[in-house]
Length: 385
Image (cartoon, rainbow, N blue to C red; front, side, top):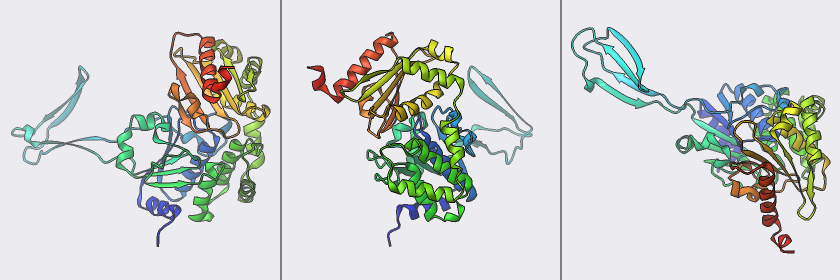
């Protein structure tokens, strides 16, 4: 009998010892909550597990989730270099080392006789991880530097690909995909429930419900389906703290975030022809507000909730450190947006992407270029009229 993807995953996890969970760069709340729910469940299975998201800074609204502090912005060293010296006949008196001209030198003094180079062997240790699970990644490139700097890892060990996006490239050894789902959290719940629902405790249920509420903007999204409401009800029965989630996600805003929201509204522009709204923020805007780049996720969520006529939302801001202009583009109603900014080599996923433009142009000049590029991509006939 052919095993289902869920059964294949259960079998594979049972065999593994150290598991890596990874999400796309600029992961959204659905991915963060889903990854933490899976991390908590694997902990109950006594599996050593790490969660890594490229260049990740935890948005303050998710700090209440159990385990949120474990998410790392980069991978630890994946292998060790092993130097083996046969001292069987000569023994070892001392071992010292130094670093000179960026070269490591190791000094071994034998107790007797001579230690020749023929006695030295080198090798690489096994990989730190023996299984990778991707959450919400349409392709490996969306994982940012986690994949870009460590592509050999993904070719050497099994990869489980869990996602709901229709554009998923099915890159996993096991692909657990459901394009009819609104959130990745639904697929994670389906798997956890099939693997033994008794392990879904209050913390796991809260993480999954957080993912769903964040993705649907508290069920206000047009993509919300009846089955999602049924699942939310089940998670509440399992102990998910709905009131705490709503308070953390929507009723807790720092003064800096509120000021940044006000500045974003003052700069807001709208192209009704293509359903695009956008705004720009300078370094000075962030400084005056006392806000951080991570606060933009809250700003985007507010725009999605309140600008119901918008199909696409774009924020452009000056990067505080490297002088680049950073763009964040979101499909407000689940529209794919990655292709709209493909020319700028974006990171992210189908409905939420981020990119950087390094040039000597001003923020205003970059804004004009990006907006015209999006217009030409969405409605080329609009430019000729």
